[in-house]
Amino acid sequence: MFWISALIMVAMFIPISIMLTAMPFLTRETVSFGVSVSEEMYYSPQLRQMRRRYAWISGSLYTLLLLACLFLLLGTGEKSQPYVLTFYISVVCICSAVINLMFYLKMKKAKAAFPQASMQSGRIAVDTKFRSRKMTISNKWFLLHIGVMLVSTVLAVVYYDSFPSSLAMKFDWQGNVIRSVPKSLRTVLGLNLMQLVMIALFMFINWTILKSKQQINPDHPEQSAAQNAVFRLRWSMFNAVSGMIMVLLFSLIQLNMRYEVQGSILMIVSLLMPSLIVIMALVISLTTGQGGRRIGRPALGTGTTAINDDRYWKLGLIYFNPSDPAMFIEKRMGIGWTINFARPAAWLIIVGILVIVTAAGFIVS
Picture (cartoon, rainbow, N blue to C red):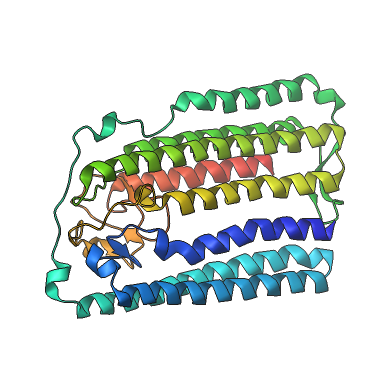
């Protein structure tokens, strides 16, 4: 059982490590390690070398950490394995943050050494018909998710009396139950509440993908707009598929409460489903790139930079621009979107999500 779980864990963490390692190769050509640059600068020998150095350092470090984690899992008892995994994930997050900060600071110095002509603010392109493109799937698709949730809820209520008096809530790596709770409507239907919260969150993410600020390369605006539309559509579809996988996972956990499926099988499936999500994210990231830059790679532009707005990006990660009405904007590091933290509504959204998720988790537990 340990080897199966370990292999699944590797299948999950290797794609994550690859995405972290490939990060500077997936960003737009007008961004390098969180700093705005021209395409001329992006493809310069100096920045090419920085990207290769980043990949070598990151790849080597994450590989060593994963091997160390597997070695510790082999040498520790079952009770210590969750702590090993928690330690591994924490160290990976810390190392990623440190490496990104180091290269962000190096990039700031490198940019300052380039000729001033290469750092001039570029032109801004706006597509007035951009919103008319097919950029996301409809939120109506989430009716399928709601349907699965409702079926699970109805079955749980109808067959409530057939649930055992003690419900298994936590398993070890061998599939043995290590935590049980007395049966109650709260514990049985709590998983359906979590499904509802997740569905609402995935629908909100789909809406943010649609409403996020358009960013078009002025050197080839038409192709850039088309790439960005495909970029959003792919991640919108990924969002819906990931949501369905998580809803089905919670339904499986609830089903296990009634029929008491073998713990090892539940453990394997519970690891396989998130692993599938991570692998799908890796494939989309490598084939699409940030903003769709890897879709039908265009010829190099004139060397301009989209917007030299580094002052609004804190450490290349946090966007804080009071004069920008946009709420959601593409990340500069990694793939996806972030929030304009200068907007009061952004803080309300963050606090609201945390409160709802925490409240739902408290009810379930």
